Image (cartoon, rainbow, N blue to C red; front, top):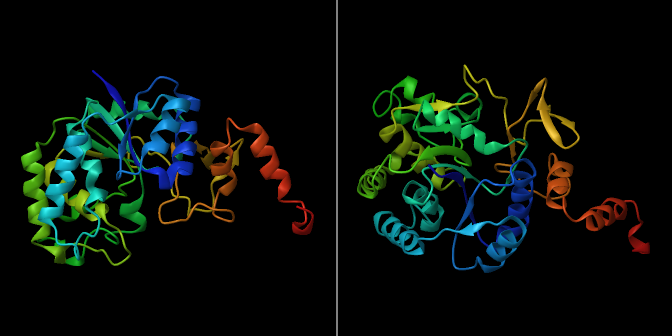
Amino acid sequence: MKRGIYIVANDKVIENAIALLNSIRLFDKEVPVYLIPFNDEYHQVIETLHRLHQVELFPDLALLERITNRVGEIFDRDFLKLPNKMRKLATWFGVLDEFLYIDTDIVVFDKIADTLNHLSECDFFCCDYHYSSEGLRNIFSEIVKDTIFTPEALQDVFNSGFWGSRRGVISEEQLYDVLKDCAQHREYFDFSQGVTDQPILNYLILKCFDRRMNLVKPPENAPGSWAGSKHFENRQYVLYDRAQKLKYLHWAGISIRPGAPYWDVWEHYRYLHEPETALWRKFSRFIPFANR
């Protein structure tokens, strides 16, 4: 059985991708990682990540094009502006038997592939508090309550930046059937905050995956992960929620730049293997601008 990690990236997010892979490899030197190109502008990021961390290009580019084209045919552009945002759906038809999907605006604090052990109990898992902190916002409209999904099912909504599953749980045809259903019912979804793939992915999971797990719920009781939470404690660039070590930190909806929450954590992992650059960046903050 082959386990590993998928990311979606292009050259535009190379800095975030380097930080993510630096953190993954700090705790796990061996786990396979595959890059799904967001578009054709990916050659710099794959060259860099392959050189630094043995990241491989997703081998079936024809599959990516096929899914992108089908999504573009199914959805109107005023409904789903960027069909490429749905390329993460190719993970169910890729080379990994069990896989994690991780957004590039994340850093991890553990051997994160070990979370795949939970697939012995489920076919899909996530690890976030969206269901309790955000409710249906950025996923569904109120119309789905009791008519489309039960209250119990809606307790399983999730942020689409970190999740795990296994190959072959659904077929391509099943996928396209669900996407067609979504395209006919725009009123089900909440796109008011500019989200794209998240509502569609949630619909797919709630419709097709009966064995679901959220690791923040019992018995795992994992801590939160959102960078907008201000109470996490930084212990040598590993974050803790009281006594619990976070599995990862996600800057969902937050621009990663100086002044952002936990900027020092992101900067640490981005320049983990560039000590001279890290040192210069640290001390340049204290040099008056006129003297630079």
